[in-house]
Image 1: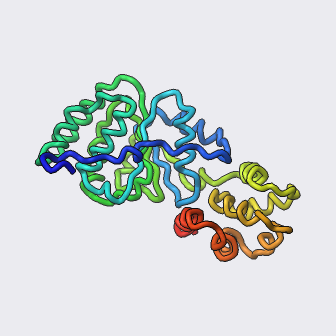
Image 2: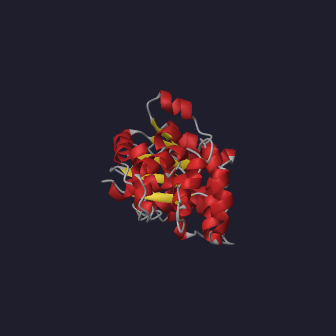
Image 3: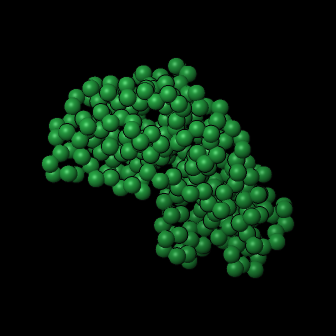
Length: 286
């Protein structure tokens, strides 16, 4: 933070949309649902880790006809001044002159009352006369009541052309039920994000270098129950194995047992960076 004002030194990489991976499965039905929900004020995408939420939204912004901004949230954003600084910076990546008055208020030594900030920000964003998306990824990291209250007040009378996409592992503490009742909310949840059998088979066939019987691929897809991270781990398990699917198919039960096996027998033999990524997903997905 600047010592002579309240301005925040921003990490610009938090404003970058994550690149779509080479093995991403194109999910046309979900992309269509996101397109159709553009007239809603809020799109909530809520599911445990490992269900491809961020990648889906990143892909949608990639093909969407209207401009989109991105903000990756972390624990440090549980401060209203910091949160708003990043929020405005994200919007300014697509509308460079947006919310300048609000930014001046935020940069002042003493933060103005919340009602002044809300009114100023909403009025300024309402001057934008074309549709735009703004994604708040990992919104579950926000637990500060003041930040949630601010979002609730903005969404009470939201700017006409702003479409807010909230992506997280659990619902944020905003008025979800009220937004839903007012017809201002669209939702994608775990049941929507699970890979279908066909999508799972397509992914495994593309991700493995082995010639595997379609019935075996289908059985493995069924065991993962549409969990994207589970499919990634299955693909890792098949690397360098003579009979890659045999042990996996012998496991009793479905996802829980598969996860335990993959962690103990596969993940522990991967490089540290890969282990860290997948352990994060598995710890929140069982």
